[in-house]
Each structure stands twice: as structure tokens, then as C-alpha cells.
Amino acid sequence: MKMTRWLLLIILTLFQDSYVRIGTVLGLAAGYGSLQVIGGELWVNMSAYGFIGWGFGAYLGYLRSHNTPESRPPKLKVYQGGR
Image 1 (tube, rainbow, N blue to C red):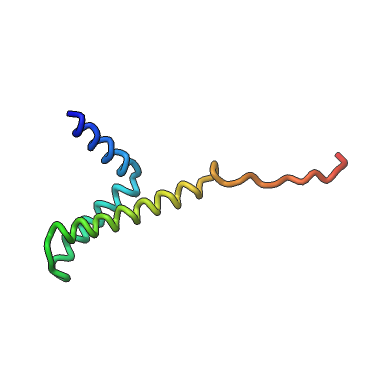
Image 2 (cartoon, rainbow, N blue to C red):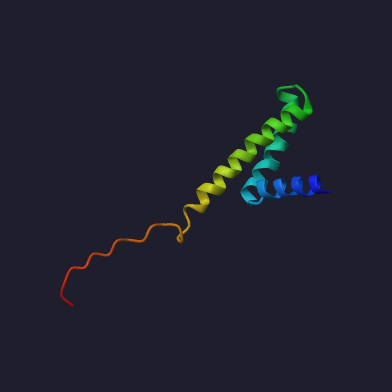
């Protein structure tokens, strides 16, 4: 039971972002579709493309999180004197 809980925690941590989930699913689909073009084994292609999709989704999620208005540095206001 403890191992199942640990595995579930790892999976939920790795796939907590929607960009990561979408990237992984698209990578798995690309790996499945590449069997006709490249050939090879099903699980090797799907795991490789799934990992690439996971990384691409993690990059997009990281990029989008740093472009939000809350994470931008505040504009510098210079006091110019007077009223």
C-alpha cells in the first residue's frame, strides 16, 4: 500500500500542470503514429515521444507561468519632486 501511495504521489506531481498532461498525451499519440513511418517497437517509441512531449509541456508551463502579470517585476517609479 505504501508503494502504491508513493507511486501515485510521483505521478500526480509530474503531471500536475495541464500543459504537461497535454504534451505527454500528444507525445504518446505521436509515438504511436510513428510506427508506420519509422517502425520499431511500440513501447519504445511511445515512451520516447511521451517523454519528449512531457518536456515540451513542462517548458510551456514554465514559460507561461513567468509571463503572468503577477510575476512581472514592478515598474520603477521615479520621484520627480514638486506636486
